[in-house]
Length: 444
Image 1 (tube, helix red, strand yellow):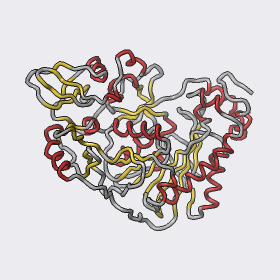
Image 2: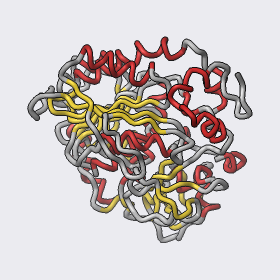
Image 3: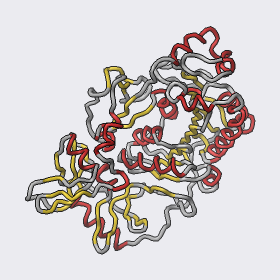
Image 4: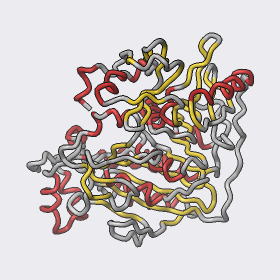
C-alpha cells in the first residue's frame, strides 16, 4: 500500500493496531513539513527571534520551534556553537532521563550529538559525560559537535558497547540508549529512510537493540536511571525489546514519568506521534535499576603527562582567555583540562578528552580551537556576518594596527576561532578541516 507521502508498502498495515481510528490523521500528518527546533547554548544570551517564533518546545527547556522558512544552519552563529538544531520529539528522551549537575552520564549511541548536548547543558559543567558511538565517521561528527558547543566535561569514545562494559561496570548514575532503529518516525523528514524500510527490518534490529541495552544496564549503578529510546513506532523494537530485557534483567523496572506538553507515561513508556505532537515519531521508556545508591569506582586517568608542557600552558592561558580553565593533562602535543575524576581510558578508542586548550608547535604553544568556543577570549575582534563567512573561508581580516597576538573574531559576542594579529592583519588560524568556501555558505 502506498500513500501520497511515500509511506512504504506494508508499513501502515504493520502499525495500524497502534493507531486505531487515527490512521487517516497519521497519514495526513506525514504529508506535512517536518518539525525542527533550536536549542540555544546557555553560555551567553541569544536572540532566537530571527529563526524561531514564540512557541517553545514544552518538554525541552529553552528550546524553540523553528519557523518553516528559517535557515539557522547557514548562519555563522551555528558553527560558533550558539545553538544546536534538533528534531523536537528527540528531545524528550533526555528530559525523561533528567540528569543533574555532578552526575556521571553515559550516552551509549550518541552521534551526531544532540542528546549529548542536552545532557551537557543539564550537567552545567559539573560531573562527567561519556559520549560513545561505535561508528568512526559518526563518532567524528559527535566529537565535532561536542567541541562546537563548548562542552568541557565530556569524553568522546568510539567503541562497541561490550568494549566499555568491563571498564565501566556499575559506574554511571544515568545511561541513555538511543538505539539504532528502523527509523519509522523519520519517514517524512528523510524519504531515504522510508525507501530502505523492509517488513522484516524490526525483527532484524531487535536483537541488536537488546544487546546494546544489556550492555548499558551493566554499566549503570544500583539506583540509577536508564532511558531507552528509538525513532520508530513498531512494538517489536520498543515494547518487545523492553519486555525481553526485563525478563532477563529482573533488577530493572519501568518508571512512570510526566513531561510538559506530553501525555503522562503512567506505565513508564511513551510514544510520540506526528499527528498528536509537534515533532516526528519517537519512543521513550524510563527504567530504574534496583538497589541502593552508589557508583563503583574505576581507575583514574593515568596517561603519562608532560608536566613542563602543562605548566607552560597554564602560564600562557591567561594571555588568551579570561577566567582560563586549568590544564591538568597532556595528550601528545595537546594540553587539556580533564573533568574531575576522569576515568582511565587506556586501551579504548578515544576521540576527545575534556577541553583541549593548546597545542605545541615547535617551541611555542598555539591556543586550541575548542578554547575559543568554550571561553571568553581576552582579545575579541568584532566582525559582521560577511566578515565571519570570510574568516571561515580562511581569509585574513584587517584589524587595528595596535592589536598584537592571538585574538578571536566575535559575532554578536560569540567567538568564531583564533587568529594572530600582526601589523594590522589577523592571520587566519581557523582549522583547515572546518573551513567552508564562500560558494558553499548558502547551503547551510
